[in-house]
Image 1 (cartoon, rainbow, N blue to C red):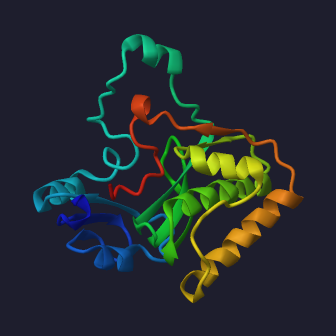
Image 2: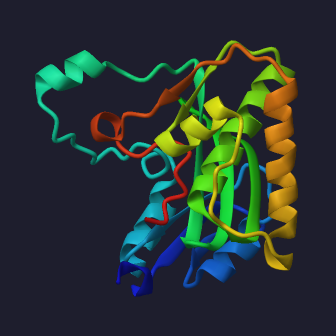
Length: 213
């Protein structure tokens, strides 16, 4: 399976920068580093070139992305609303180590990040990312919208519940405490923020993507 293929990690902004040969080494450079910028590559040469080029063309929508949709379909969808933030989650295994973050859709500037949590799922991460985004925008009295690429998480937020099948245990205790807080926030807070599905087929990966696919 693809998860066993060797990957190289370019860190442009972190405690140390450069190309790292394991996710653990990469994670050590970005953990607790505000505004960290990094991405994975399948070859060392590609990771090294990306490090030299800088993050602009590698984080969020790739300059090489070409949509398979027709011009008519693309015209109908239109362009992203850049008065927005984008959220995403990444999970190494399902369940597995999980983290989530939110970024400014246009600049890709990281606005918040949580994790990695020892045991979580991508759906839980996507759910938490949206709720974190809602709280973030409400706190800042912002009229921006939220982009997510998860229909499941959007449904959970609408229903004000985290409908995960993951069972609670000592390993994921901290994560579920955050889930409980998120559900409580949804139930006691009003918000006017619009949550919109990111059109991956038209625009490429969501700007908050962790780049570890």
